[in-house]
Length: 502
Ligand SMILES: N[C@@H](Cc1ccccc1)C(=O)O
Image (cartoon, rainbow, N blue to C red; front, top):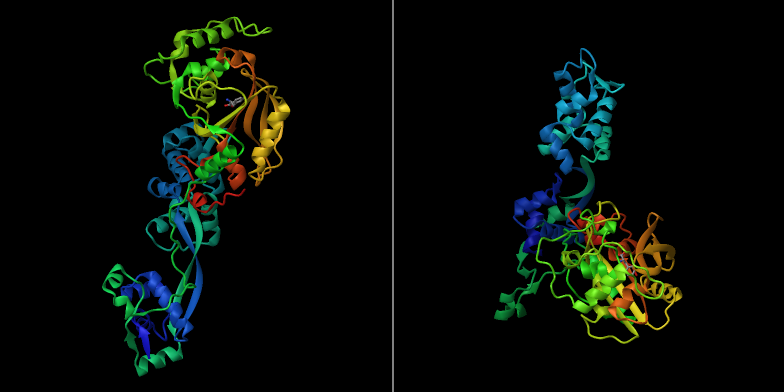
C-alpha cells in the first residue's frame, strides 16, 4: 500500500490499543495540528483509523478571577480585616472593616454578599462579626481559582464552578478533543508494509517556477476536515453601516459635507441660535480646546448672528436679550454635533452659494462629555442631513425618515414632539430594539427657525436632522450595548461574527 507521507506518519504514530489525541500525534510527528487532523480524517475514510470525539468543558480565568488569585477574594480580605480588628470578639463597624480590607465600591458589595453566603460571619445593623470557626483557607472557590491559575484541574464540585461562572471569575467553555486508534485494517496495513507516496499537499511558487508541478502527484483535498478557525480582516460593523448609510443617502439625492472636528463655538452653537448660557455650552458638556481662537469668521455673518441673539430675527423674533460675547463665539471646541457642518454649508462658506432645492448629509464623528452607559459613548457618529426647499412641512421630514429607515428594514419608527433652540417644530425619532423590544432614541430633527436661516442668508425652508449611527447599528445588528461596538470595551467576538442585516 502507498500512502502520502503525512498520512503514513500519522498511521505510524497511532496505536491499536491506546487512544492518541491529535495534539499528541502532532507532537510526535512534528506536523501542524491541522495537517494531522486532515490526514487522520483521510485515514478514517480509508478505514485505517477510527476517530473518536469527546467534548470536554474548559475553564478559563477571567481578568477579575486572575486579579483575585493574586489579591485574595474580596470576602476573604474582608474576613482577614475583620479578624485584624477583633471582630471575632465583638462587632466592628462595617465601614472600618471595609477600609481596613482596602475594598472600594463594587468590591465592597461583592465582599459583603459573599461573606454572608459563605458563613464567614454575620452583618447586623451596620456592624460585622467574624466567625472564628470559618476557614477561608479551605474555601473551595479560592482553591479552584488557584488551581486554574496554576494550569491544573480545579477538582471541585460542579456547583463551585457554576458559582465562579456566575460571579464572572471563570469562563466556562467547551472544546472537542479528537483521538484516534488503529482499526484492524490499519494494523494489517502496517504489518504488510506501507510505502510513502511522493505526494504534494500544496502547490508552491517553487513548483510553479520550476515546472515540477507537472510531474508531481497532488494529495487529495479534504474539504470536510476540521481546521482551527482563522479570522481574517473584516470591515467593522460600524463602517459597514456608515458605508450603507452613505449609499442610501446618495441614492436619495444627497451630497456629502465635510468640515473640521474642532470648530469655533460660532459654527457649533451661535449660528444655531443656541444661547451662550445654554447648559450644553458649559465646560461640563463641552470639550474645550486650549488653542488660538478662530479669526476668519465672516464679519457680516458674525454681526447678523449677534443681532439674532440680542434682538431677534424676523417679525416675531425677540432674541434672548442676554449677554453675547464675540470672544466666546470664536473659541474652539470639539464639535458636539455635526450641525456645525450644516451651518457652514448653509452660510455658503463651504460648498458655495446654494439655490433651492438642495440636499446634504455627513456621517461623521461628534464628541460629548456624557456618562458612558449601554446607549451613550463620549464620541459617536452622527448622520447629519438637511433639505433646503420652498414650503417644507413636517410631513416631508417624516416621509424622508420613513424612506431612509426602510432601506435598513426598519418600518416602525416613532416620532415624539421635542424642543431644540434651533428648530420649530422639532421631534425625536425612536426605534424598537430587535432583541430587548425597548424603544430607543435614534435621532433628533426639525425645521430650522428663522433665527437660524435668516442670518445665514437663506430665505426658504430647511428641514434637518442628526441621527445616531451607533443606534442604527444596534437596531441592525441586535447589539444591546453600544460599548460592544466600539471603544476600549468592544466585544471582538461580536465584531467578528455580527451579521449586519438590512
Ligand atoms: N444637532 C441635533 C440634531 C439636529 C440637527 C438638525 C436639526 C435638528 C436636530 C443633535 O445633535 O441632537
